[in-house]
Structure formats: C-alpha cells, structure tokens
Image 1 (cartoon, rainbow, N blue to C red):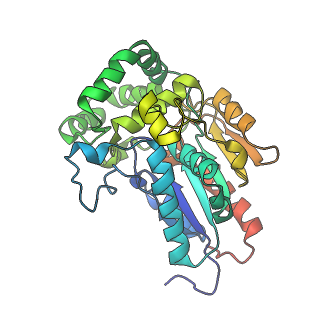
Image 2: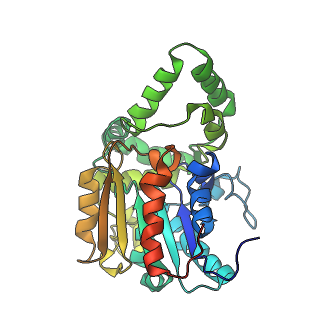
Length: 342
C-alpha cells in the first residue's frame, strides 16, 4: 500500500499528436515515464484527448459519425485540458498540479493558460518536453508535409468543406504489425527500421528497445481528427499560435472578427522548464526561441538540452529516467519537501 503519511503531488502527462497516454507506460517500469514518477513519489495521471483510443466515449455521438470528429485544437485546450485539471484536483484534494507535456501536449498547456488564465493558479510548473511550439521550423518529412499543405491549400480547404472532419493517425494493425515483425526477423532490418524512426523524429544517439516495437505499435498511433491536424498545420505554416481559421463567415460568428484571434501568451504566469533534445527535428531550437519570445520575462525558469535525444526519446529511450525524469523529480522536491520518497 502507498504511504499516506507523505505528500504525493499530482502530475499530469499530456501526450503528443497522434499518440495517447500509453506512450508514457509501454516500456518496462524502469524506463516508462509514468512508472518512473509513480515510484519517485508522484500521484500520476495520464491525459487522453478526445479521439484517442481511450477518449472516444460521448454522450450521444458515435465514433463512426462525422460530427464526432468535428473538433480542433481549440476544443482540446478549452475542454479536454481544463476538464482533466479540474478532475485531478477534485480527486486529490490538492490546489495545483504539475504538468509534463510532450510535443502537442506542451502546446495544449500553453493554449489552455493563454485563453483561460484562471488556470494559472491550478498548475504549479510546466515541464515541456520536445516543445514543438508552432512546429513551423520542423525538419524532415514534416517540413515536406508543411510545404505541401501551403502549396495545396485551396485543395485542402475544398477537401475540408466537401468531406468534413474524420479520423486520422489511427490504428492499422494489419499493416503495422507485419512491418514490425520484419524489423525483428530479417537481417539488417532492425537498422533499417531504426533509420526510418530517425528520419521522422531525428538522428538519435540514444537506445530504444526495438524488441518493444510490437508493443509500441499496438497503441500508437492512437487517433485524432483531420481538423485538429489542419489546425496544427495552420499554426506551423503561419508561425503563429492562433485559433482555427474556419472561413470569414464562421470566424465572424465564433470570434466576432473575420480572422482568427491569436492566443495571448502574456496571460501565462506558470513557471516553465523547456527540455529539448539536440537531435529533435520536430522541436527545433528556433521553435523554442519563438515560444520563449512570446512568454513574459521570468516565466521560463530553465531551458535544458539533452545531447542526442530525438522527438520520441523523452518517452521511449532506455535512459529517460536519468536524462529527463530524475531531474524533474529533483526540481519538484525543492518545492515539495514533504514529498514521498522511493
């Protein structure tokens, strides 16, 4: 039984785009972020945004209905993040939580606080891992995708209007699992598969246990909507944190103006720590600097670089405890002297 005489501060993990809560617990306990922090004395909570494997229950809509997928990043930050924060505080009786965001999860925290500044008093610290910002400076295949998005914007807009929003980044086990098996049985295939990961996420020098690949792909990707993906692409292409640009008429109805309003980062008062890998091509140094330039002076308490980490190493690297989560624990212990020990 856990020791109830000591303090277990609540900490919320917020997943990246196309992922879900399982990305923080699919490694063995010693290298799974959720287990690492639970063992370190935290009360750990895992957020699942709508559309993910564990975020598909709705009062009256079914997941095969088009309307179920009609949501953007605005909705995820306005409703999902706030609901999770409030529920965690209700369950624990605490006055504030700690937040660990990964990629999109870092953006969710910023957008929530920018539009709902009353939540500044409910979050003690933001630990932002792989802080992609707008992702406008991303490299690799994402850069090519952003180029295609801008070049084919009229086609994208027509598709959005004609087809509507639907699921993307979904599970496709009949394709993923045979590929994973090939990665583990064909000579030289592990190196090829690892190279494919490095192409997408950055040239990591860290170790990922590729024998766990079937487990990873049993849970990831986890699903999201085309509208949320297009909203992220919009922010990346414009290098701006702003609300979804629907169309002038819909913008006028929603926002009272023809163009989408920006998120006001001057509302953010929560202490921030940025944690970025030097091999992370999706959370570039330029994106981190762009985000920090929008925050008030003094909000960023630390900006740490981890040599050789790419965009998924924060969750899957075998040394993530030493490189990411033990340092986070040390920072929190300074604020929570009565925190539970291992």
